[in-house]
Length: 81
Figure 1 (cartoon, helix red, strand yellow):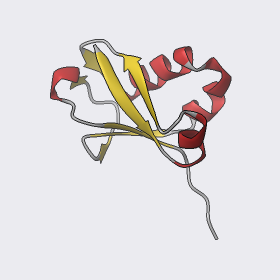
Figure 2: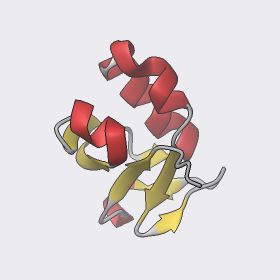
Figure 3: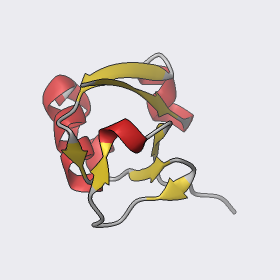
């Protein structure tokens, strides 16, 4: 099932801020990151370092039904001082 994934910060700039990804009916953070890495192998390392938010909450190891997901966001690590 095709889902839009929003990308933020420097990775958002590289991925035009939003990408379409074909996901299975059941997903987890690991599955989403794997699909993104396969679709965008040139950004594999950057994607691997990202957090994933599903419906505005950070995803862990939970399994989600794609039909119940309204929003997926890819959030790179942030540094500051």
